[in-house]
Length: 351
Image (tube, rainbow, N blue to C red; front, side, top):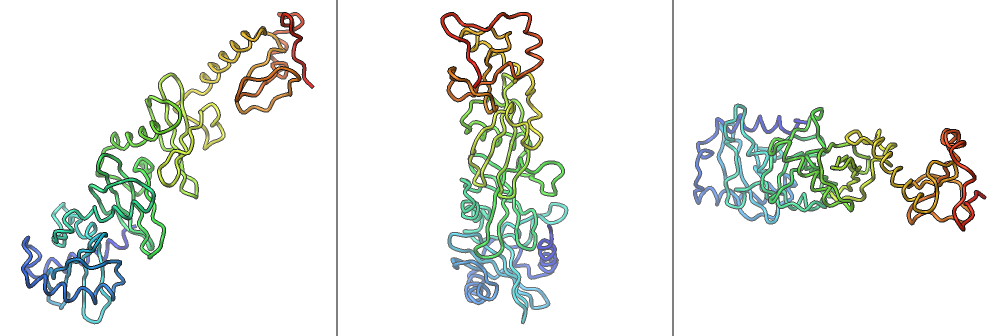
């Protein structure tokens, strides 16, 4: 994870013994002149995705290593470490601004006016993932061979882990920090767990089913970057939220019907919820003229395969299920009910 971070640490050691120019907050004209002169060749040699807007020479080390900062149009800024006869090493301004061990400020932090809020340069990157986020703060977490990983917070709320592809044209992704639990090696530190929980609550608010959230948890993700969250609502109702890679809620699946999804809901008592639903459907059957105790009384449940009824339609969106298909119910009711009938209407029969 921290492979790229090792190079950054080495650069910081070199910078620590470099020219005192690193410590200056003002930017001398000659530093800008030297930076603008060297930057085009360094950008080309380092294959840096940057349309140059500003530059400065930060300082030099005794081994002839030179340090430069560049600002780019419509993208993040960079610090370039240039050694003679060696390809330049590049760190973006978020990386370069990470505190040193012990919490000391970085002596390689970007200072050009366009780079003073380095995280803002990641806004186009997170926008490309489909997330709506004007980056407020950013923190460098680490890197893999093909990804640079950041935590970013957004103006107006939202905390994400942004995985930025190193290769030009590569796919970057952004997931809520709530996805990364205690067992993950990725840690979000810019917000608290309570603030991260609000991000899940906002997903529930965007779902097509009403829910006053009382608890929530991350369930898992599919290989196509679809995330699943469980939310428990007041009134013993709960849902599995299916969230696409762009952060949009695709559907809210009732916990009663989510038993086969990653082990089902754990925050909602689905047995109680099913009992409550059965009671509702029994009331519907009674209103239709049936005795709910009797084996031939239909009950109605979503998503169940049921015998076909010859002349009794189920309520819209529901499938009829015969109580007579449940042996226990038939034994319990056999002595309590006479022949099933409804005044003026023949009892429904299976065909």
